[in-house]
Structure formats: structure tokens, C-alpha cells
Image 1 (spheres, rainbow, N blue to C red):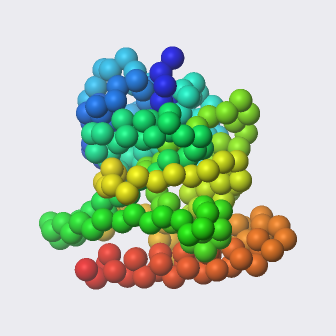
Image 2 (cartoon, rainbow, N blue to C red):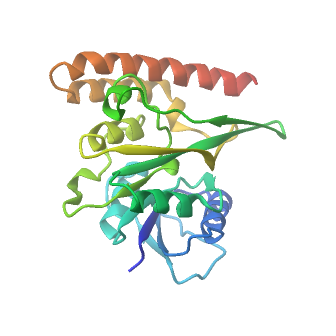
Image 3 (tube, rainbow, N blue to C red):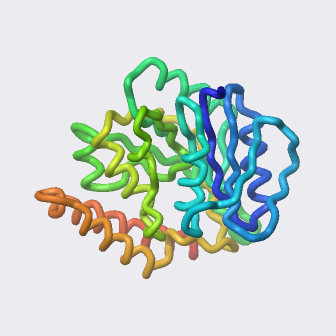
Length: 253
């Protein structure tokens, strides 16, 4: 049984998917299994016959969250890592994250990312990494300092019900997932750009769909209880402003 189960949700983006798969095949850490979850009626085609790579159709609600949950149900590793089909990993990402997870009791390890904006045949890269203030749960109430799920690896436990994404959210699904997961254990970060997060203006990103963004923010607010319902307003406001600003920035850079 592989130590790390990797899940890639995908839908009709073969070129991007193959770039993501290549970044996994190039990992210095090799004890992994990969589940490519197809969220489309079209067949998935990859340029590899590696026996560790498995393909399956999304058995849940259509969308990335349903696909991720399908992969979670198939995963058997000690750890679960996620990679979006339009992102890629540096070759030592899994090695560094598994090492730190094996030496701590953290439930989640995340890394910094290289944000690569591609527009008009030009590319601009910037590094992004944030850490918590006081402790992770407090900081998450203020903003999503972790970011994309492509940067995280999580520890499985005997009861995996907590490792599921809300399939009713079309935006902010990573933030809502972290808000639940942080109640189960500690988060730890690696301040290195171990993920290439590509933002290509020719590709539609649901994360900047304003209607989906506001709808998901409302659902996350209603899920909170007690004083968390008040403090989460800060985090949601910060995220909404950041996403709208980034959307404008990426359009006009």
C-alpha cells in the first residue's frame, strides 16, 4: 500500500492534466498512488502507463468537490495530497512534506506557491506564503492563509468523515474545508514554493465567479456557530476583497 494517495480532479483539460501528472512522476519521493477522477463524459487520456496511476469517474455531485470526494473514498494511503489539473508540483514537494508529517503530529502540511500569471504570451511569477498568527484556527477566522489545495497534504485517521469537501460549494471550498479540518489537529507550513499555481486568462476560473463567491460565503457564514459566526465575517470579507482585487489584477497586468 502506498504511503501517499494523490487525487487529481479533471475535466476536459488533457494538456494541463498531463503537465500535472508529469510533475508527479518527477517526484523524488516515489511511494505514492495517483487517482485521476474524471468529471466529464469524455474519456481521459494521459501520456503514461505507470501502474501507480488509476482512473475513475466522479461518483458524486458533478464538480471538483464531488471528484475529490470520489478520490478520497478510493484512497488507501497514510496521507492524502491534492493537485488541481492546472497546477504542478516541484520535484521535492512530497519528499519534504512527508518528512515533516512523519516527524510531527500535524494533521495538515501546506507549502508556499509560485503564482505564475500567463497572459498575451508573457509570464509573471510571484511567490506567496503566509503563516498563522497565535494559532491556525484563530488565523483562519481572519483569512485563508493556506490557499490552494494543491499545496496541502493531510493525515488520514480511522474515521475519514471529516476529510470530505462540501459538494454544494462552487467557490471557497478550500477555505471551508480548512475551517473544519483545523478543529481536528495542528497545521504546519513549509515556506518554500513547492507548487506552481498557474493563472491563465484563457481558462475560466470558478474562484473568480462573483455570484458563486458570494453564495459560498453565505453558506460558510451560516455553518458557523456561536462567536465564530461573528469572527468569520472578517475572514469572508478579506477573502472576497482579495479575490476581486486579484481578478482585476490578473486581467489588467
